[in-house]
Image (cartoon, rainbow over all chains, first blue to last red; front, side, top):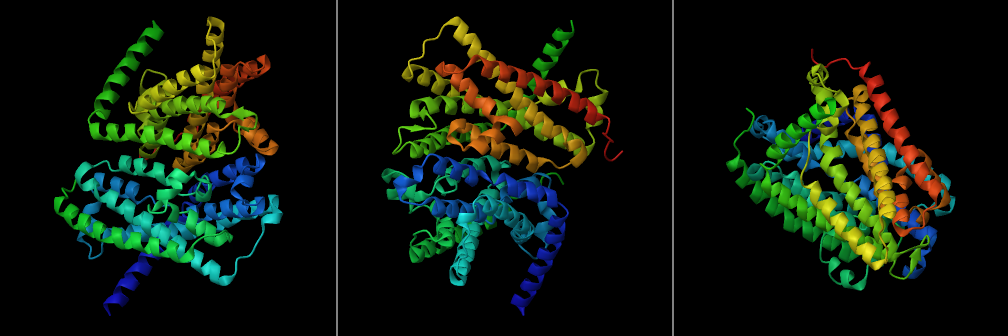
Length: 264
Length: 264
């Protein structure tokens, strides 16, 4: 019964947010375009034959970067910025009264946005395939399912990390600068700009213990058919979620006690 | 007389925005760390490309570092001046407060593009200059007066192009209201400025010099520093900068005709 209620709430939220997002189609299309950096990186790699040294063929590398683009498209999180604005404007107060954690609202917002973005991402992929017809491939169903799950897990990890940072708004008001700080290692170490296999040894020795390679590199390798350790990848993703979730719960319950309802 | 008035007004701008920014001291500190990490990250990425190669697109590592340093300086300038003001323009138009700007006995473009300043971008500029000085040392570049003027001219032209690009996008806010994501697209394209233009394939090189003149912004000044730039390229950059500056001005005046105030 209770779970049914939560489900209904969640689907209603999702529906509302989806129609909300559809209104800003161009915005979301632009977001999709702004994610094309992996393709530029691919161009540097193949144009200078850099991939010879890491034993990845042109085709496999182009699939990798295409998948990295996709994973990034469906794991982008911006909850800090929404929450910061809402809390500075005092909009969080009405949300707190509702019998639903406001982060569900943001979660639905993100999922709805990904749904809206899907056709645009597909369009960009099609254009990519027109220019690189040799890299067309169809992953088998099992792999596709696994990579969707791992992308979702990657999204969850990032959502949790950002929600924890967002909760810092209760103390500092401007939490987005902390997010920008954390975005730097995410950008350079997640495999968005260069596959993690190409990293020098002194980085590779410790990077697999951090959450970063599981955000983009692992799902992208999985989907593109490049070599990766599936079981350890999934277990690390789940481990990070299990580690982060209690932190979020704790900081949320502490933060709401601290909340001062600004702007109202 | 007029110039003096504008200088005076600008002094006031500086004073007020610095005062309001300095209220968030921890924020500035975090931004400083972000700037340092970001520079380390980009050098790390560059070093991955040069792991097994001595040159990329004809650029050696120590030469490519010059591009990196110029990018860092320009990015600092963007973060200090262009970015905060752009956010303001969007706000002005959404909330209809552009009316107040237009009513002031001062040039509206001057007002909205210089009103705010984010001091944390200064560190990026300083970091970039330090890296540039280091590059001048390791590349054994001799500096004399004429060389210095030439470098200065190209960098100033780059700043003008960059400013015009940002200002173009903010001007389109008058029609589209929400252009936040359009700036993300520009930001992601500008990212390419971290790498030598010659490392890309021919078609992308054309794209980045004709459609979005990112090539002019970092590669040409770097070539000037290395003393390998042809004279026509410098001339071209100056011309492009003037055309951009002029047309962004015209575009703003044109766009203002379409401005219909919000909520009044």
